[in-house]
Image (cartoon, rainbow, N blue to C red; front, side):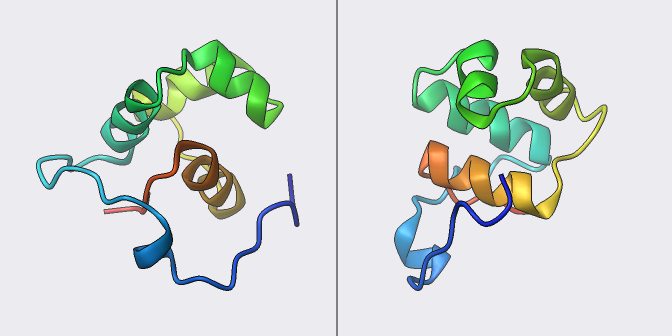
Length: 83
């Protein structure tokens, strides 16, 4: 995954913001995934990871690395960041 996604456009202009009521990174990932009609398995497949890892992120059991977060934001067309 490293080095796959690079953009010269500022993220605030490139990605759509998530609703302001989302407080946890897991909630943000789940909301963005569902908005794009991805299942955890299909998102995992696009990223080359297991669906179980997507579930772990959404349940705040673990957190994506900065590179994984950048990849998620690109695939989901959303601005994702740690609170």
